[in-house]
Image 1 (tube, rainbow, N blue to C red):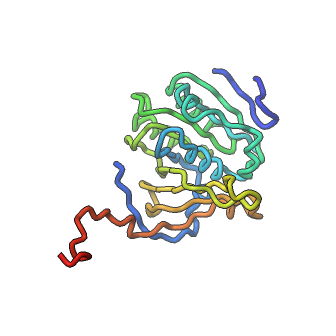
Image 2 (tube, rainbow, N blue to C red):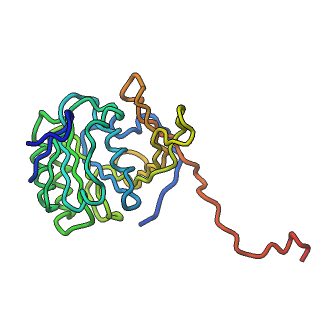
Image 3 (cartoon, helix red, strand yellow):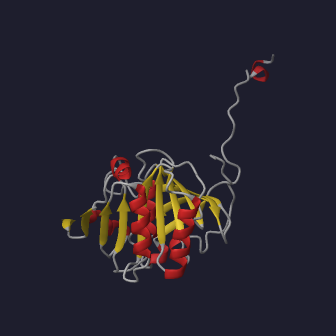
Length: 244
């Protein structure tokens, strides 16, 4: 295995949204039990899903297995191990690179059976035939039986059927202010849309990450979005303004 840094190793192998104000207490994904969760990037080349998943990983020194298929690597790139400390991740990343989505699913199932892993993350591009409801059901049951959390990042998938217990759609927002340089990007900000879930209410949050928080449970901040949504554009002439 070839290390790409001291933190990682490589193995070469409906836009319908429910906007609702809900309490943020106990809503952070990493506070829940070991289940399968989907993370869907809202647009190509948007790193929001990757950053959100990293922010939700368990606070553990046990390694995380991270598997990517070929198309996911081309669109999302590879993890940069040295930057993981900014997300409070203190363990190691065991990165597995495969060519076909079916190999991602196989590696995720095998990883979920390993008690020495703190989590398993898989990346699959699009909605290939092998990524069926039955396949995701197998992953969901394996996660719940083994106690190892599973995340599936589904780039280019607009919400095909899935047995995941939580399904998140992520999009990047303008970053926070940089205290050293007003022209430079600051802390990441995401819009986190939980559009389907079992055992909790769906909703939309503005998600921020504070690497300096003393407790790992406080690092991911979720602020509910407004319940009214955006105002519709008015394309009619403003006749009342001219007295007409």
